[in-house]
Length: 548
Image (cartoon, rainbow, N blue to C red; front, side):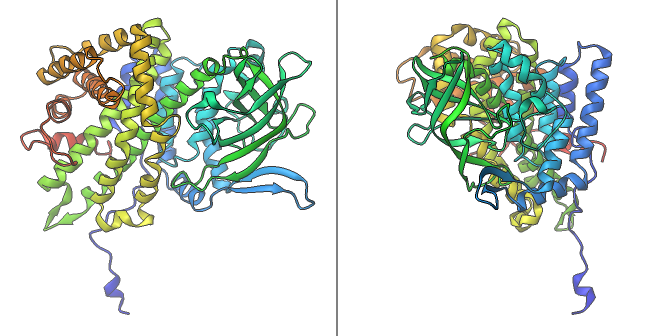
């Protein structure tokens, strides 16, 4: 065939060799804003860390790691060649490269560093754009710290290793490792999210705090980890336990991985079913208070679901804008076509609202004050419900911006689309989040006060936001059928919160477009139906990669 027929034209070049952090205006401005009162040295250090991570995430090498890790999913090795039970998960080398880089960048280290949660959240947001699947063990390891702190003796042993910047993949006793990973096991097949119906039994041993567990976990996150926080029924009720994968004497604990889940997306990550049969465990917290002990871990992982979804949204938007910048249609750049500009602006609003809310939650963790903790109690399930719900339709629309090219695996968009529903399901699906927010409203009035104070900081700045706040207060005052209305209420809370943050912190054209469309109702049911009178060009320009 003649070579002239294979001349490539009007195709976007590969999106490689860019700074994922520095190229994202909403992200960099948000980090600088929340660090404004920090010491100059801390601001400089954070900027250098995130810039280095952003450049690594945008490199061709990291993108290749992500592709290969997904094309070569983990394999379960239940036995060695001699028939001995080993229950090991084998990963592609690029998975270990991704995870090792993440640990070295401090993505499991937030609880003891200045502005640690903000820095980690921004880093998690950035590095997940290279590959989202390995975020699960990072999240579990990070989130285990507050649960272990209910037992100072356990925390003293494990926290330095959980927050370490050293990644060691081999299974050995935790005391022999400079860094460890943790997983979690709560879900059982008969109960799902109803964890109080768990049947895994914990029998106390003579030694104080030691138990043997027997039961089955239907969904165990990161089953290749060094340790796990699990729930089981002790004599005085549901209790939290630490299960070590390798016991201090070097022998393997009874931890049978029955199978790995064959998931829609998240292909590079291992999720499994495990069997406990006389499995040695150490109690964490008091008997009968397992939910209260592990709830801080759950809250932290739910925030990571928000970060993960916001990260996917930003990467999908980046790919769509990049394609539109380099593609010509009817003799003009696609990004300049009025209807495509409307679609891209709508996607950009969704992404920036998610990013801004994510950073606000991370900064609240760093503040650690009573009002901020009260705010998080309500804002985390609200954000987890809404941001993760918006991820899938947004990623699907971004894929469509590339047309048939977006439907092809090589574009990377199908991988993002398969990943997009995950965070809405994990750590409590939509109904669980909505009902948890409702529980906070009914039982913890200080959380609503803190939420309304946050929203109220933007009162008077936009009439559509003010009207939405009044509507929300009316909705909250009506308790009739409140459980059936929980999703509706939480959606309104999320939009009002996002609107308040954008009105205070985003450029006027972004805040105006968000309030007009999301709060004022001036849009259709699909993306790309914003009012044409808005400054859509400015919104799209803000979404472009800065510095390119």
